[in-house]
Image (cartoon, rainbow, N blue to C red; front, side, top):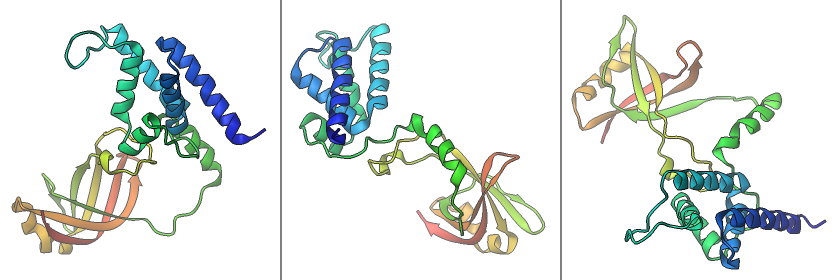
Length: 221
């Protein structure tokens, strides 16, 4: 059996099922749903359908002019548009679908990661660079400890990368006192930041990412 035809057939089947549940009978809408499945995957498409049901259950969604409620299909496509980037919108709504594997849904990452852990590769070196300003500093005889919080810049990720939640990540940075003394003045100037490069690790007791600084410099905003 031709792989592409099988994929198309499966997408068409799921699209018809969802279209029926949404009360949509137009071939154009069914085609759009099929392309959503081809571009983003069936799991993503079902997640949006579930979100549509939740909105309907809580009173629905009005049109921009407040003249009436959107139909379930209208809510579904509205949510889809809000989730897709420009390239995906072209593929879904203008029929320019690229051949290939559907995008990875963030909710499905765990099973993939677990399956990969039986044959892990080896990291030869792991370094990280970060830029920011600490709010507090803890000095000890030979080392300074600071913490920085990072919220992922999701909008700048490539389209193919699954979008993670915007949960802040706390990073603990250890800086040798000799290095710190060279940049300490930057923490009192609101226009300056610290540019830190170092070895990255994970602290299992505090459950934080840790950076052991190898280089610390002042950086203008």
